[in-house]
Length: 226
Image 1 (spheres, one colour):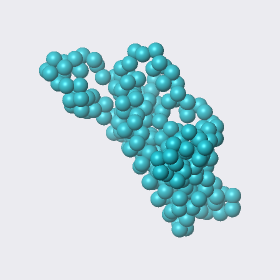
Image 2 (tube, helix red, strand yellow):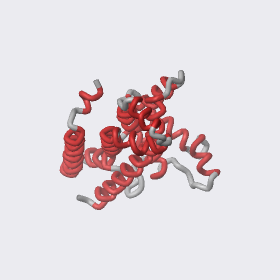
Image 3 (cartoon, one colour):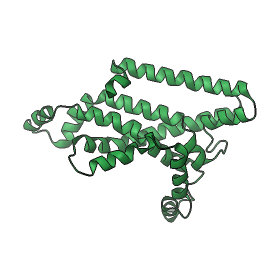
Image 4 (cartoon, rainbow, N blue to C red):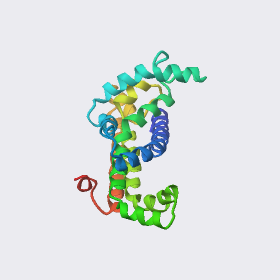
């Protein structure tokens, strides 16, 4: 494996780990609210979160690039806080990855929370368990398969990003170049051996990670979604 490929592997793993942690932190309260809320705006919020499932990645990447630019709403705010810009940086990649992978984390968590019987929480409440105590002591253990699925899908989906990453991060080796872009580079330069090596690695890793999720949850993700 070439030095640039190792660098791309490190950037990819760092991006996937950072994005997955942020997705779990942000996605858990959102999924809980969506699973329990009867607000009229919940459908609107759910639709916005699910948009990356149907939106072409280049479209999302284009609008994110505008938002992250020095004159964009996110980029200008970041610079005002002392940052040096978000476009074509690792921080910009993290923001894009979190938004693009959000439905892959929120939806499994939402399904897991919705499956918890309200009577279980009411029983815990009668035992004087505070809301936060009920969440940590009752909800989190019952929703464990949902958390495993959400973390796995969020991590795996971030590994394979191409369109969004290319639009907002470009192709800077050691900084924003991830494995999917490195594969594209090798194909363009007709280095099919290197492209095959990276592609086969991602294929095997993706297969293994999904196989482990199926084994741990004891059922198919596809069957669970129906």
